[in-house]
Amino acid sequence: MIIVSGTLHVNDRDRYLESCDEVIRLARAAPGCIDFHLSADRLDADRINVFEQWETVADVETFRGSGPGDDQSAVIRDAAVDQHDIASTTRL
Image (cartoon, rainbow, N blue to C red; front, side, top):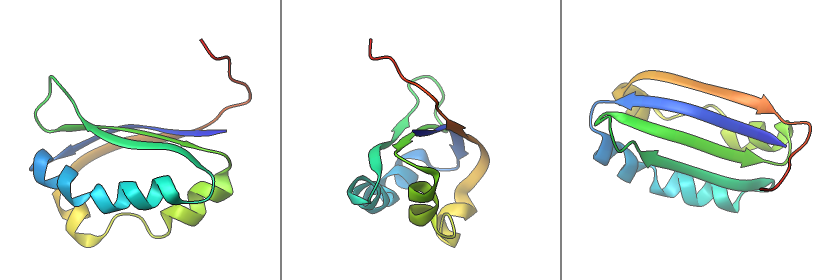
C-alpha cells in the first residue's frame, strides 16, 4: 500500500480547494485509489492537508501524470508531500 501525505501552503485556500473538486473525483475513480482527500487546516488559514491511499506505486504514477496544472502550481507557495511504501497495516 502507498500513502501520500503532507501539506500545501497556497495563496487562496478556498479557491484552490474548489479548483481541486474534479481532481478529487477523478482520483477516487482511478484504478488502485483507496482514498484521496485534500482538506483545509483548521488552524492555519493557508494550509491544505493532503492524504492519499493507493494500492501500488504504479497506480499513483499512472494517476499523477505530469502533476498539478499551471494554474494550480502558480498559487502553491510551499509543498511538503511525501510518498510512503507501507509494508503492513493494522486496523484499529
